Picture 1 (cartoon, rainbow, N blue to C red):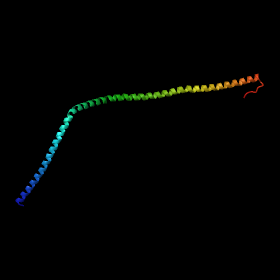
Picture 2 (picture 1 turned 45 degrees about the vertical axis):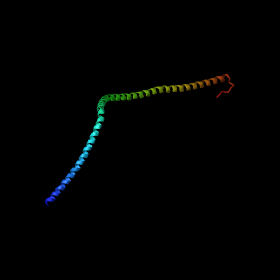
Picture 3 (picture 1 turned 120 degrees about the horizontal axis):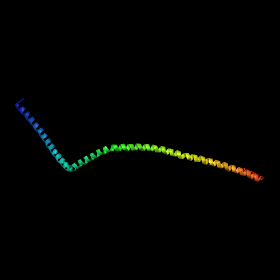
Length: 150
């Protein structure tokens, strides 16, 4: 290998390294351009959001406080509602048993009245039959020549 060949190889390597550095420089230039564009858009976005950001954060803190208060107050209210539901269930059971008792109380006199009416009907029928027989016998004694009715 000669000195000229060595210098040619070194020159070729230097050219390749220079070309690679050129490609890297172009890529870095594009990256810097994109970063600047992104930075300017981010600045614009922050400029738009900045006036609304502080009130929004304050409102979120207020909502968070309200949710904490609601959560603390909700448990006792749920316990009260549960107790009321249990009391309502007990009341409904008592009301059902009272209704059953009232129905039995009302039905018993109706049964007694129906029995009394049926008994009175039978008695009235028996009395009417007895009176009819007695009147028939009396009529036969008064007017014996007529035939008895059947």
